[in-house]
Length: 331
Image (cartoon, rainbow, N blue to C red; front, side):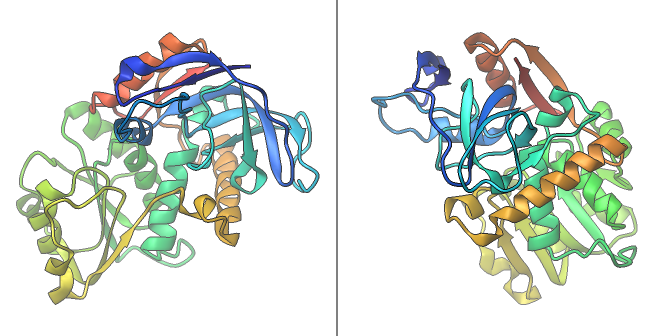
């Protein structure tokens, strides 16, 4: 079968190569890939390759396709099912014709929503869901109108779905966006208020009549905003992030007894935790939400043709760092 991988940390190292198609065993599915989406983790993983690889590494952490084969222990899927998923960081990704994946982190694809709109959503939705409902411990079943969340990088991939989910959970949502187009984007997705992350966040939030916020999620480089985060978070509030802290010190949050949490969507699958099945459940809800119109896909760019050229072009677009929403490559 055909696969696409990288051999070093440069984007020009993308190559097409032949790979033996694997067989599904245990709880695994063999999925014929029909669509993928590019995420910042693809770029970060490639850039962290230190030396020339002897075999290409297959990236790709969003996938959509058809189940071609099931392992003997598979319970929830059958051959012919259309599925979508975000994948397992410890295994080959979706940049290949066929992918092996554990059924517990897979869901039935939306029935009424296109491939491109569907495949844009798994990784960012899982990340946003775990941030909001596990790391911030937000309960969407209660009245959250007196709670405020600040989403830094609200127009990005994760921010675009986090804004929607926080809005649906009833919170007052402040999202950051830096251009008129992005301001309109986050407002359409449910942001109640918008501030510009290229300007002083403290003054902007205070000008909105808000002294402190209950929750902050950092979806971009935290260091430029660290003093603002420390100032704006409420005592006993929660700050969670998907990005590293290079210069910022967690101890700065101590005097406010702020809760701090990392979010890495791949943790459950990497350590084969029982809770990895939660990801399949989140994605089943996502499929229903997309089909009902409750959740809006955040795809903004689609490349047609599952080939090396389009994967490189899509990667370059994401790597540029100015994307609004998601980029998809469709077979």
